[in-house]
Image (tube, rainbow, N blue to C red; front, side, top):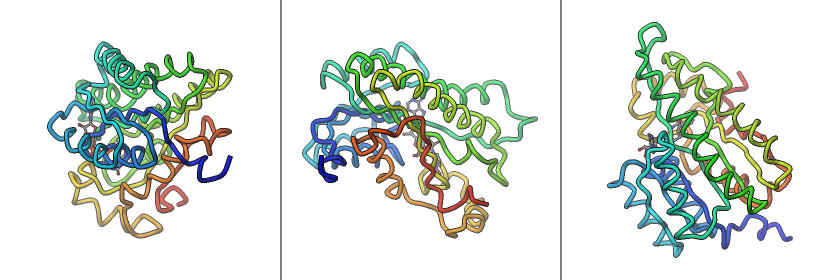
Length: 254
Ligand code: NAI
């Protein structure tokens, strides 16, 4: 197969969670530009419409799905809707996530649980739903959104729940990769450094510190994660499973 064909997603069916804004929205559009039809999943229905329109504008099919990834029944319904519309799933980008900055001694049980439920359990539930289809097909690529926060401890912001959830995603990814490798299903993760989205803009007071502590002296843009995402999604990564791709401007080197 020629290299250009390896990177093509033509004819593939994908879903992206957390696709109403930020990295997920850019990811959905990028997978569509690479040739995939894309189901976009979020609980923010209003903003999801923009993602749907952007995918249709590049000539691919889009399906907007209202789903809270922490609810197993909603995730079941999500996968049913995708199968009804697209017939199958080849690529799953389990990206929905939140951050909560609060000192470990102060965070409430509810806030702790919400972060773990969305960032770790939500990733598991949507990976499981995709995996059930892919295992039957004997092929598929699951990409889980981790973070450099699964590798290092961010400072100065206190975010033990977030860091723990992302470390969980890294080990979940490797576990699924080993379980599903014999059946042709690959599972990898993506670990960005600080990226300019609404998530990081909500903590604008820390941006100068983050930039100063990044070897490249700047934050990344969602577009700069996309080549790594397409690599993990497509046939070019046919021998890559259980890997984590770090895209962080050198942050984790220090
Ligand atoms: P964002 O806040 O801009 O977008 C997150 C999206 O997820 C939103 O559309 C939101 O509605 C959706 N979402 C949240 N909870 C959900 C739920 N229960 N069910 C369905 N959808 C839900 O965030 P951003 O920055 O685009 O982050 C996307 C992912 O990338 C997250 O997992 C985040 O932890 C991760 N990440 C972000 C980094 C950054 O610097 N922005 C760095 C490393 C990882």
